[in-house]
Length: 243
Image (cartoon, rainbow, N blue to C red; front, side):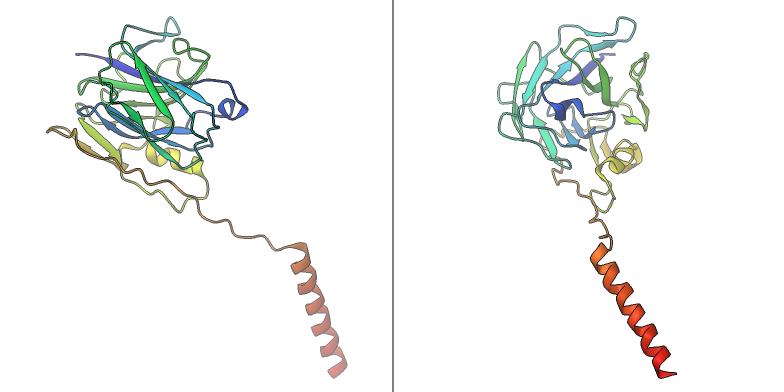
């Protein structure tokens, strides 16, 4: 069974990139037939951030990624990506590859497999050695210790889809929660995904609708509270004088 690992590495060139923690990036779709995927940013990603994607195998014992598969370079060279935005990476296995935000380039042999797929997202100074893992997706149950030494668990930053999934897409809520971080548990729950095991799904388009958070209930201002207090005091005085 072929095992291909796709890793995401955020370059640490900005303070915003440094702020990306586990669960703040999550996969929202996977398409083995088209060779693409999408992610949601659950925190702001600053303009100029560079993220590497690598189709390489995670070697937990060595603490590094290894193999000769492709490495992709995603650059936010046309502006920041706001929290809640969904970014799609399409046709990554050919020269027409694209990213819906920023730009993507590739080196090495680019190819995703419908069988035995594991994808990781992590931060690091290079695409070889991760400093910390952010997210993961697997269609093989993270077999072979693929979550070892990552700090991730199934449902806690890591999503386990049914074996042999050709296509999968998050189909749960995208609005109404109090914070973007609250979506992480939903997106990493396979019961919230629509999955197809067979058929040609290369033309399937993932949902790129942004995630949003509920408007906070405004706290009473000090001025409004003062007016309320004065009103109650005046009412008390009128009641006493009318007795």
